[in-house]
Amino acid sequence: MQCSYFDAGLCHSCTLMGVPYAEQLATKEATARTLLAAHDSAVWLPAVASAESGFRAKAKMVVGGSSAAPTLGILDGQGRGVDLRRCGIVAPGIRAAFDALAEAITASGLEPYDVPARRGELKNVIVTESADGELMVRFVVRSRASVAAVASIVSALQEALPQVAVVTANLLPEHKAVVEGAEEVVLTSRSTLPMRVGDVTLQVRPQSFVQTNTAIAGALYRQGRAWIDAVAPSTVWDLYCGVGGFALHAAAPGRRVLGIEVSPDAVESARTAAGALGMPDVAFEVGDATTAVRVAGAAPELLVVNPPRRGLGADLADWIERSRIPTVVYSSCNAASLARDLEGMPSYRVTQARLFDMFPQSTHSEVMVLLERAPAA
Ligand SMILES: C[S@@+](CC[C@H](N)C(=O)[O-])C[C@H]1O[C@@H](n2cnc3c(N)ncnc32)[C@H](O)[C@@H]1O
Image 1 (cartoon, rainbow, N blue to C red):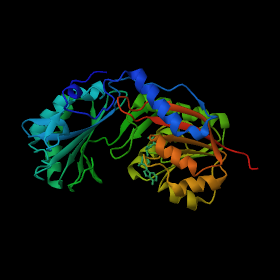
Image 2 (cartoon, rainbow, N blue to C red):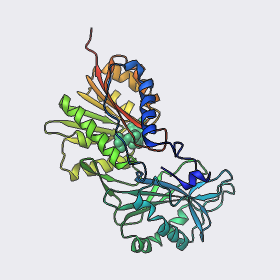
Image 3 (tube, rainbow, N blue to C red):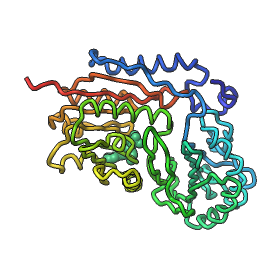
Image 4 (cartoon, helix red, strand yellow):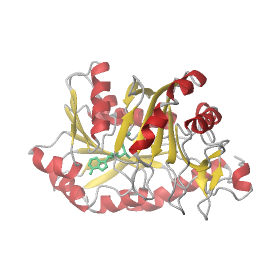
């Protein structure tokens, strides 16, 4: 893939831009295999390739410039806005909305936040697109006083872009290098974006994690289900379940599934989805994964884990090691922390592994492994 922003030196976020895609995929799989070399008997299924461009269903754009002429993109080394509205890895439906979003920002009168001067109000715009083309648009602002200005542009925005289903103002008062804050004000009648992913419809609320590449996430959940169904467990736990992608795919007659997730918004999303799908045996609880398993007093027949980049950590890996759970499905966006966690679970062998290219043009990818416990000696 070619990118004029990259070629002009304006954006280097996609570190593999210009590298032929087949080479990217082969290098990522070679890296993952090297990191998991201790499990050399694993069968690697063919890597799942992504579309090279237009694959990002979620765009986090820093707002710079001025209210009259906002930039949507990143900040340069001096903290000035760089406009990346034509970014080629973003889904076409999101890209097509950027001009109308910039016009809405101008109409709101909100001044973009000037990082070096610590002045201004509008920090970021976060846009998520469903496979059906609907959009969730979140304006990240510095203070509560700006919520009314965001509210004032909602109807004009929905007139210009009827596919905008959810609009929110997210409050980020601190001068911090994070994308969003803890408080969200929903400004539309709808607060949830239905997203068809794999074989289920997720119900995504604003502050919920959602996989950035919908097609690859669907393939990931289907592979997870295939591994789970081959074992046919009667109980499954999905730790770090987010909005429930793995748990909802794991549902089957006679099987109880429990998802654990730290974000209340994500758990509410997952419960809504399970309700809409008519899955009474799929439940979700808010909690820290490590604490939840410790207090549960029992263990499932099969465990799914999909932690953030830092991995499970020593405590949870140790709990799994001692748990005697026969089968674990571990999906990781960081093969280095996956390998580290596996060192703390020496009773488990990787029997199957597969790379899912969630993040083309970058060195990142998702690796999912099927872990089976060696029979006790
Ligand atoms: C990589 S995402 C995976 C989400 C989900 N499995 C999916 O496919 O969308 C990791 C999730 O872990 C959650 N999380 C982070 N720390 C956690 C913790 N200590 N306990 C439980 N969940 C946590 C995050 O909120 C996020 O939803």
